[in-house]
Image 1: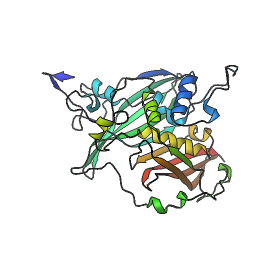
Image 2: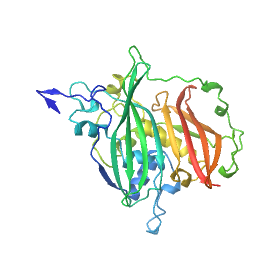
Image 3: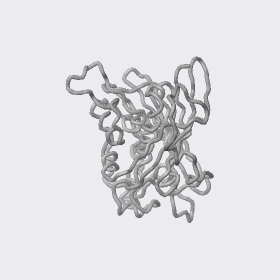
Image 4: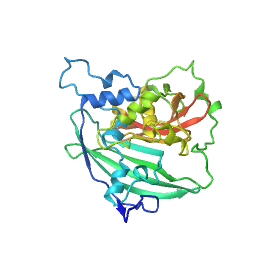
Length: 330
């Protein structure tokens, strides 16, 4: 939107709690589910059709973190509906408002043939240590009107003055974390886990082709064509100093790592996942995702298993820190 040929930029001052975007509608296909898993470097057969003769009743269930794809954030949608131009879409002052953290909550499984309505709004904005953040709430409901999931996605709109790196800080030294050297660990089934037990780890090598493939996977909305994930030159102008993967991509790796220990239904029975980005995850990086069970709660014939997951790269840097709750029967 322009007034007198001047863009009305949707910067931090223009963002207001309650601003909403238009609803989106996505009919999920088996191909969508397979492509998301492939773009997440997940070769689990759960996310592939058995073949041409597969029963039509054998519907594929989506990876839990796919909610950010079939019900995407689309902050440019909210900006436009509010009469502004998103910073990522600006013709005069284009810059990124990158991922800081995201919490996903699941209420029911989503499978092929489901028709998902996505709604999005500004939940809150706040300042912390000189930086400015905006959190969005996105909700996903199916064709029966059942809310199947929601997530709160926080973006960094402005960095603290003088801050030259997007790298976060942690009071944990990844180099001495006990889960960085777990070659002799015997991993238990989720039914036998006790507090302090290690979860099955996952090692991911990020690649440029994977980053591009994930960025291109859009079931609704239009790509900017150039962002900090796909355009090295543009990325150098932003705080990361080079192209990086997207925060939701790292979340898909945490999702996959947790599924090495927990069944898929433990996510969709009221599970949740909060992930905070710490150090940029770039093509060529090798990240070891490890975790442990930190608490167990029983309530109403259900067992709630709280886990802490860390992603540490080849340089010993903490890439992400995640907290997950998986829900099973007692």
